[in-house]
Length: 295
Image (cartoon, rainbow, N blue to C red; front, side):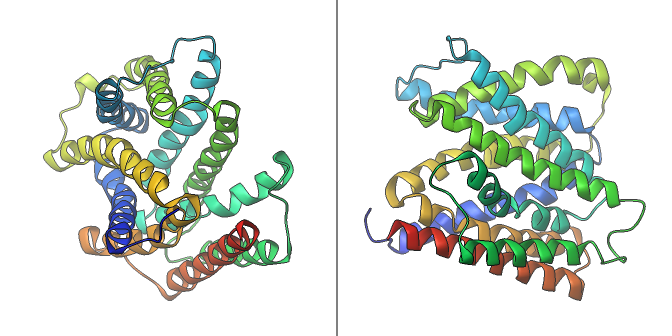
């Protein structure tokens, strides 16, 4: 891989900002839309730029090939379930808390990788990072000012959503030889197929008269953080590799906290800052162990 340049760090920062912006936009979307509808509209609008790029690059979409069951399963676990859980949970908690809770994905993936892959085993540095990171999350749950008995379960649902991302990532290894554009386009198609009847029967979204800000947020969520961001991620991954791209893990909770304060005037307590710091330190040590192994 080439030595990263200023443009590469700029693109990485933009990607982090885009993904971090999803959290406060989900919060705004919940003002008018229910969780299943939010999940459906995200995958529907998100599929548009991905399918356009597949058409432009003449990449065959294999959503209905012999591997359709893998695409459907990954679409459910990696998109349907977490999009629903996050949208449901974020109705009752601040978006900055959701950003911090979701940032545990690299820590959870390290744990699952130890048990389900051959070359991602624990070592001292990884174990230390995991303990520090999850200690930050446990400490965050002690912030009674932001997490209480009324929204405790909502915070847990967001954590469950982050775990779904990790499980979906492990399942994606089963079809890792296929082009990324094909895999993403196929799982977005299946997620749309799954969510359309659910949204129709459970929430009847056609009866909703949305607020303007909610409508703008839901369209933005689909096209930018779900669709365009994936294409940007693929470019960064292709040009600079996985280790460089994975640095978004540090930036997303930081930007998510800042954006929640700027756009929604969300409270930032001392415990939030301590938890955020602990999570970032934990991710740093896990990534450091990965870099040493790669070297």
